[in-house]
Image (cartoon, rainbow, N blue to C red; front, side, top):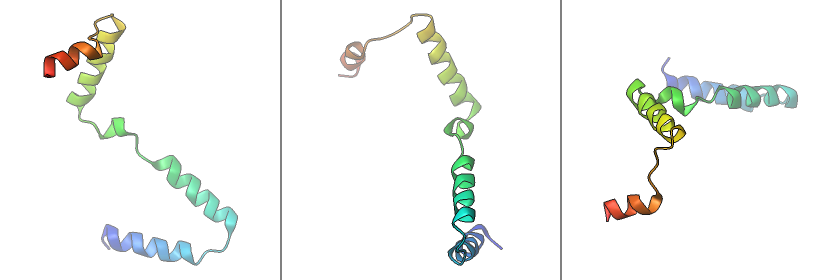
Length: 72
């Protein structure tokens, strides 16, 4: 069974459930399982972000106005 078929079957099952408590548990589970965008980044993207944070922590900053001047 492919993922689309599995999703449809799951929705059908959920639609037939009348137990509010169970629906709340399923909703909470789904909300807690949402993936963190950080885990979807490549290692090089994560490294670049960490490098930028480190530079900011060390006081290496460029003002927004300076950035606008460079791209104009």
